[in-house]
Image 1: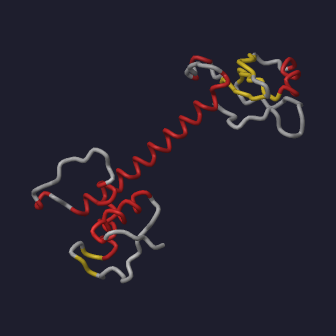
Image 2: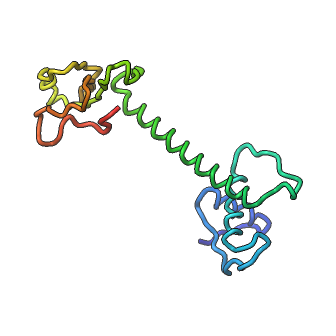
Image 3: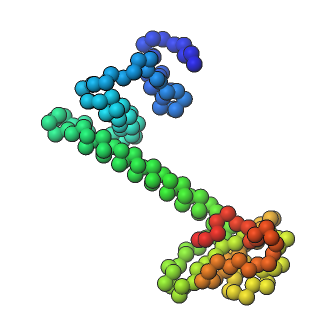
Length: 179
């Protein structure tokens, strides 16, 4: 890739492209075996940690007393923080998708398992062409909604209800079996 611009803007442009994830700079020379941080791996870890904390929207105050600064502890804390952030983002995405997937059944709060006496609520998305078979279910069930393609049913049972006899395609079709 070739980038044209003023030489004075080079560091800012390259940093901006790296921040966007559009470009990653690979040095022409291998990193020195020994640096002020020790090994080259430790140097790379320090660079990654610095980049990570520089990308944080709310920065904390810088440590001014070098005697109180432990680089190894700092690198470990940054690694733990990055992992915790990834896990929190994954959980948020999972919960957002789950809420979106449950929208057709309406706005509700799931009761605790002990409140249901060991029973669970099972959510099914049944195509209209198979909906006539819902009446054959002997367990407690309720149609919670429908749209132009599907009927949204909740069945109360201790184990997931598979005895639909609807087809060999494995109906009821739904992307999220257990809730």
